Structures are given as C-alpha cells and as structure tokens.
Image 1 (cartoon, helix red, strand yellow):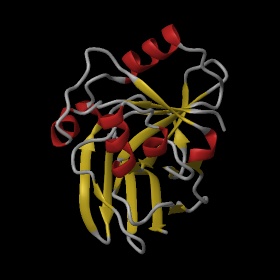
Image 2 (image 1 turned 180 degrees about the horizontal axis):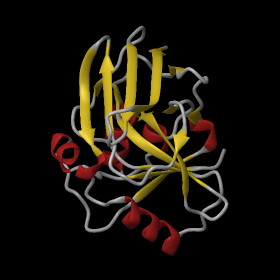
Image 3 (image 1 turned 135 degrees about the horizontal axis):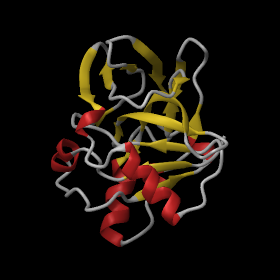
Image 4 (image 1 turned 135 degrees about the vertical axis):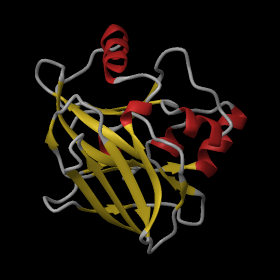
Length: 199
C-alpha cells in the first residue's frame, strides 16, 4: 500500500464545526502506510484508538486508490480517525500533526469498488445512531482539483490513497463502540461498507 494523501477541510460544514476556514486551494497532510488498515472482503475492520483515554473523533470519507497511470481506479468508504487531544496540542505548540492524524491504525478502510467519478453519498453511524451523512458534491475542492494539485506539487505513486475530506458531524469514539460506515452511488446502491469495533 502506498501513502495516504489527506485533504484538509474539504467540507465547509466540518470546517465550521472545528472553528476553521476552508482554503483557497486543496492542502494535504501525509498518512504513512502503517496508518492504514484494510477491511476484510465483508467489510469487517477495527478502529484502533491507541490512546483510548484521549479524545479521538471519527471522520467518514470517500477514499480512492491511484492506479498505474496515476488516475483513480478504486474507491471505498473510510474513517480517518483523529486524536484531537494530540492535534490540539500540536496546533498550540506549532508542532507537526502526525500523532493526531497518522498514528498506527488511524486510517480505517472499507470494501473497495471500481472507480466511479460521479457523486456518492457517505454515511457513518455509532452504535446504530447516524452521525455523518453527506454527498461528495458538497466538497469544496472536487476530485479534479485534488488530483491537479497533487500531480503539480508531488510525485504520486501507484497504490497511493487520496482521502477526500469529511463532512460535518464528527464525534468522539470510545472503546467498545460499533462503527458502521457505507457509501452509495448515484443510483442509491451500496458500493462500499465498513463494520468496525473500537478497541
């Protein structure tokens, strides 16, 4: 698996809920390969909290994988878990964010489907309660803009993953929570699922 390219504040609603602004062009942070965890063929996975006494949020996202020609070839629903305790400290002190955004197991992936460039709906529930639901048409920077910026500034590799940002509704997770996430295409068909327990 390649590295993960996580786009920063790509939904206005999420930017507002964390008291931040959207950016004039897409800005990214890196997620190491060790951060990302593949699901089983049925979508089973684990959300590793790593430091469960700290504040760790769920962030549902549409994720796509880059192929040999550096274009999207597959897509899935994913959970970019964020350690707000570590991220907030890093922001305050001017430190790197890696402990908050790239820790082991922080990128939780669902089942893969073939790439479809149309808008999709992404959803997440915690213990059966829907927390996040939005269409990717609400992204501030669409896929073409993300790929244009990435290819202009960085050397991408086949197998790299692009995390496209999270809509509003992020929230804290606790050990034992059951996290379900899913993605539906423009026809309303479920094309990716993720069923995980927090540990």
